[in-house]
Image 1: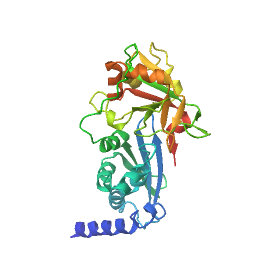
Image 2: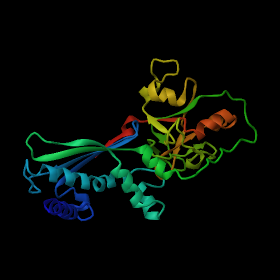
Image 3: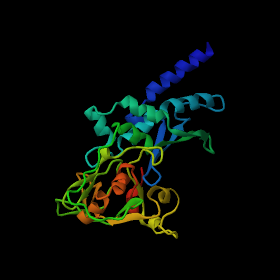
Length: 300
């Protein structure tokens, strides 16, 4: 009987402080800070539950506090993922508003977040938990085609070396195609790649997730990571991704309503498109985008 009463007490509390009723719950008993790291492909949230403000006393209320935090965190993660940039035209919220993605599917990802067990502050006034959602899981949810579309082969191919990966350097302000402005390239899950003739070189449907390269269409890093003391200039996971002989390209422009899409020289595009091996690099997602460091890590 006591366990049943405790269950209904938890349920009632969750309803009262639910984010749907209180601007995501942050101004009642929860404090939420978010961090988005495109280099690691992680969305991390630190959620603190104010025990005293909620009328919970320790030690007797510890179990109740843990249960409330466990039930509340998926809803509190939701706005973090909703704001995630998908491409130049859309965020995750945009896709849900269009009916292209179900909120229920997103909530499953929230519930499956990697969790650090909640801990108490030194003054015992709050309980905090850390929750991390991998961008690969969000990307996998949005990659629904069974077979990748082949990249368009040029009518007149050029002689090109076979590379092991593609690195596009776009870490300075670039002209925005079609505008008299410049901007830093912004990261997104599915940036398109264009050439200077505005031919589409790479987009979401040309990418095929695999066990070797995972579910991310592109990876992001800062300039310092591509000039390491190794033959390829790379180390660790990036060296494994783009191999010992990557094609290095300097972006010329950026394109998109939100500037997420690098524009590369037509000659560089032909080096990629002219051989089966290099076209395969796109399909496998062996693409590394080098962006300004300020664009790669966001905290709020």
